[in-house]
Length: 394
Ligand SMILES: C[S@@+](CC[C@H](N)C(=O)[O-])C[C@H]1O[C@@H](n2cnc3c(N)ncnc32)[C@H](O)[C@@H]1O
Image (cartoon, rainbow, N blue to C red; front, side, top):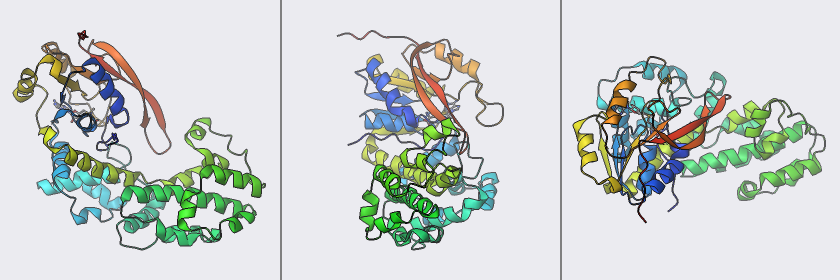
C-alpha cells in the first residue's frame, strides 16, 4: 500500500514533510512501535505514523479541531455539507457561535473547505470566480450534468462536448481530469485565437480518452509545428512565477496565466479529498489510533509517557511556533512554561520549530513551501530538534 501524506488542511500542518520527519525520527529510534503526537492539530504526523505501522496517540487541546477530527473518522459527512456555500454565507458561518456540537463540526468543515490557506479567514476564490466554482461544485456533486462556463469558453475549440465526461465517481479523479483537460483546451483556444486553425483539425476525431491521454509535451510539439504564430518568448517576466509553471503553461504565458490557474484551480476539491483521505487511512489502521483531548502537561499524557520503555516510544512535539502570529493576535501559548516542562522529561523527544528557541539539538532541516495567498509563497526551513541523542546498540 502506497504511503500517503495526509492530514486536514491546518495551520502549521506538517503534511508536505510528514514522511521525511517520520523517517528521520524512526532512523533514530528504529525499535519504536508507539508514536505520541502531543500537539496533533490536523493529524498529518499521526496519519503518517499509522501508515508506518505504529500505534498512535493523537492529542489535541483545541476542542474544535479535536471534535472535527473525531467526527470525520467515525461518520460520513451529512448531505447538506455538500451544498455550495457562497462568500456571504461563508463569512456569516465563520463569525457564528455554534450552539451544538453539530454546528461546531459544520462550521469547522466550512472553514476548512471554503477558505484559502490554513488561516480560515478568507474565502477561497475571488468574486469573479464564484460562479465558475459553484458550477464545478454542483457538477461534482451530481446536481448539474456539465460546466456551462467551460462549455461556452471552449466552444471555439470544437471540443466542448468533452466537458460532461470529466465527471467520475471519484472526486480526486474528477479534479485531475479537470486540470488535465482544461490546460490543453486552453492551449488550443489560445492557438485558434492567434489564427492558427490547423490545431483544431488535429483533434477533431479524438475521443475523451484519447484527449485525456494526450501528453502536454506532445501538445507543445504540436503547437511548435502547427502554430508558429503563437508568441513563445512573452513569458519572460516573473522568474519565480515561471518556475512554478510547468511545460505547457510556459508556452502561453501571455499575462493571462493567473486566469488559467484560476480555471484549473481545484484546491477546494483537493481539500475534500484530504478529508476523505483521513477517513480512509484511519479505517485501515482503526484499532491503532487513540484520540486524546488534553494539554501536553496533563497527567494522562504523562502516564502514557511513563508506561513505555525509552526504545519503544517516539514522543513528538509540534507546538504553535514561537513568535509566529498564526491567529492575528498574541498567541496564548506559554513558551516559557512549555520550556520548563520539557526540562522535566527524562525520555528522548522530538520537536519541530523554525528556530532553536528551546535550546535543543538540531537534527534535520527541511524546506517547506508556505503559501500566503494565491500568488505569494515562500520557502521556509522547518527544523527538527531533539533533547538528547541516544546511541543505538548494534
Ligand atoms: C503547529 S500545530 C500542529 C500541527 C500538526 N502537527 C499538523 O501537522 O497539522 C500546534 C497545535 O497545538 C495545539 N495546542 C496548543 N496548545 C496546546 C496544549 N497546551 N496542549 C496540546 N495541544 C496544544 C494547537 O491547537 C495546534 O493545533
